[in-house]
Length: 183
Image 1 (cartoon, rainbow, N blue to C red):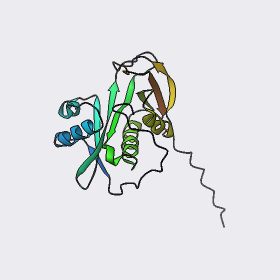
Image 2: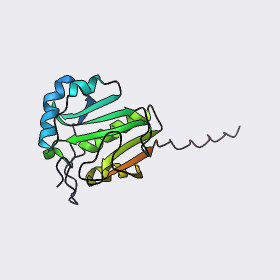
Image 3: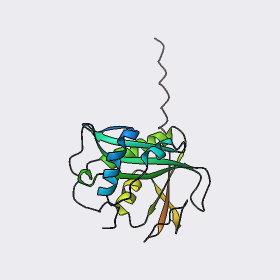
């Protein structure tokens, strides 16, 4: 397993968490978010600073008042090679004992909904070794744009960076109403 990445498994998904609630991250979520970061083999974050950043939007997932995971969106105002300007899914971390229960999927769908209210394109870049994240995003319609050794300051230590994008799904056109025959 690569430190910081969820481990791939072909095992069936565990029981979904039925009472999962998502909300914008709050400063009071910081201690639990950092517990999750450490448990997942990642570095702690300054959640208060991230919340205050106007170019970011952060969500947490909780059940019965306990934070189980968190995720971020980051707006990048410039292109970087193949990586365009726009809203990026900027990471999702789920408490390891709660993985494979739909938390990461719920956080990612909610972030996409947030982006679709603002833009027609969503971006995502990832270390090529993070196969769990890649599979999740491909299942949500992300397509590979290209590869890079670094994107927007991320250097993909120990791996190659993959750049993905997805287009907002458009609602199917409503069929025209049938005309009523006058009687």
